[in-house]
Image (cartoon, rainbow, N blue to C red):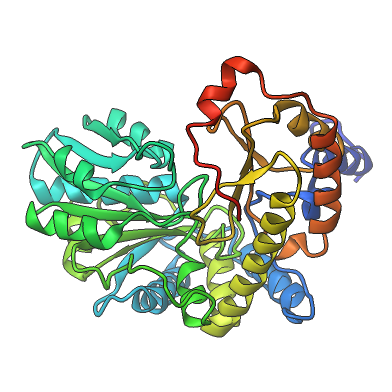
Length: 416
């Protein structure tokens, strides 16, 4: 065919596709320290990484034309496999749930289930102010008041359970806590919050978007033997969201929402028939890609992936803490680290690092800027070069402006 109906030739189209891939920086994925997608690569610790990633993408492609209504029989089996396996790992004796299009939808479905459970049209939800922005969004959508509870002075990664309880109102329907907070990587005191939820007969949802597919495997693998309880082993926890397209290594969009039992899933289906999801038409490609990761990695494969990711976090955090003027925020239990400063203006540092091709997230708190890194297996070998560029950029950066120094000093100066 010389030309397609649009007038484009095959070669013109492929040239444009390549340009857009480069504009998306797909050719520089290894320099992206805050990515979502199938992150596996082969390495000495993960010799099967490339093959698993390719098979996950191949499964996605084979199911890309399907949806879960009519042609979704196989995908529904895949979804059930994922829920049964991971729900059990998270401590449920009766695992129930589904795959969603992302962490925001998972949080929305959980809060809608809480609303159905409470039998209210309106009301409020209580959560620490480190909660994901989707909590504010869903409150606007669902006619709920967001009650965001501030962190204790000087420790943005921490939560005061007494302050959470004090924020509960007569119309409160749920509490939301986080396992793997943005951008601190911390775990909220979920055991204590769970006791509060039980005391007040409130639904407790745990947002494990970042932490859900790494925390259990760090515990199983013995990396973190003092991990606080945060999953269904806490009696008050009703649901847990966890993103497959983050530490689950699956192609996006793919998150999961797990309920403590099938009774809560039935409540979700009542308010969001027929599946409990907000999306009616759900593509089967993401489910197939995620299922492939789960089937080929299994529990011990995920343990290896978790240890690989956390070892790079440790390398980056330790290296950053040795650079004069930099601090690493305390509290992280996952593969996420927040680098900030009380003396150096990191805004030009961010610009210089980005000019050198590095990709990462930026946090405005602590002021004026912090660098958020979430290393995963595709970042293999990149930490030394990043740290060298970080040190050069900090050495050339100006001092913190006087008007911002007071705010920066509100964050305790803990090293790694």
